[in-house]
Image (cartoon, rainbow, N blue to C red; front, top):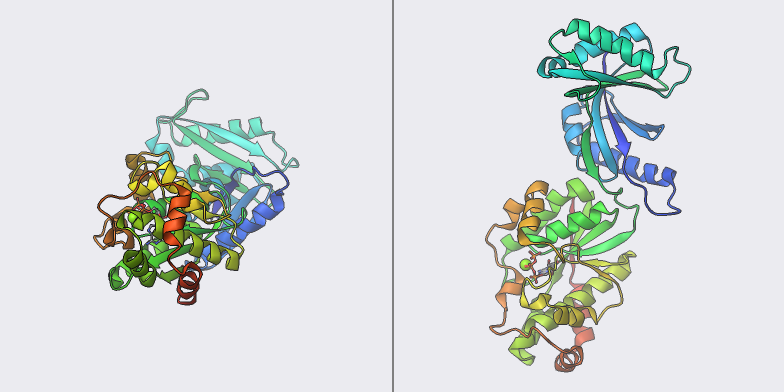
Length: 390
Ligand code: ATP
Ligand code: MG
């Protein structure tokens, strides 16, 4: 019986005190949720390996393999075939299952691993035996134990024996939800989908917040953000976007504050509102796509003034990256093409001609004090629209 199966090896477990079991449980929960859109699968963990088995004709193993490549907490992944723990059957399976790999490679070796110690051969004996059978079946492919092109893995585990070729790298990182909750500020630009991806990779479950300035920004601009969040769910899991009406705040700032402080004051409002959303959801950090020196509001002085209004840490995973590096990740995760669609962002609509780049925190505070800050924040929070994705 050839039994197509996916083997997943766990990634790093770095936090002291975060035990392996809860890490595994989180990961299995995330895997089950991600696979539920594809079909029925049986997912279980044994000896630090997660097994994904097909259940019926809905179990599309190719689609599952692709989806699992985006689940954080997985270090490596292999498509494998399983059979009874019998040396002759294992060799037969290796010959049929690895036909394409064996015909493509010039050299190979077998790496046997025996986690079930009751199996009668040692790992070395098993490797030699299966290697001999494969060499006989594919005489063009030479045995090379030092620098083989192809490594054939044979694993004797509790329930069955498995045969697979070299594993491919998984998404890495830690399971989403294993490291708390954060609020991520999601604009329609290139940067913030990447910062969202990077913090999700560290195991944080994220709540995207978008500031929406209708009619200065169009309905399409909002749809674009929803689409970006939808793409990100492949990595972040299901999310609920909080869409904050931001027009009244921007009009108030424009009417009552000097133009060169506009962006700074606006960003302080974003932080206050994000912090309120964090509090309501038990989130412990705010994530932004800021990048040192990229625009006037991303100088150290400007960031100090933005962050002065909240107590939560602001995580800025892109702070030291070059634009090209950010674009590369955006392409890899599939957000780039959507990010470059040409719709206005709320920040570009009101951008001052000469923004302050070296503001003093107390000056900004004094200038904005003409506004009824609490009432404006309350009004925006009361008007939040929530959109589920994933
Ligand atoms: P991005 O490419 O992510 O839009 P940016 O380079 O355009 O970033 P800014 O416009 O200064 O930079 O925004 C910095 C960060 O502030 C963004 O990365 C995002 O996290 C947040 N932000 C900006 N505009 C919005 C918005 N309309 N809604 C939610 N968050 C926003
Ligand atoms: Mg932007």
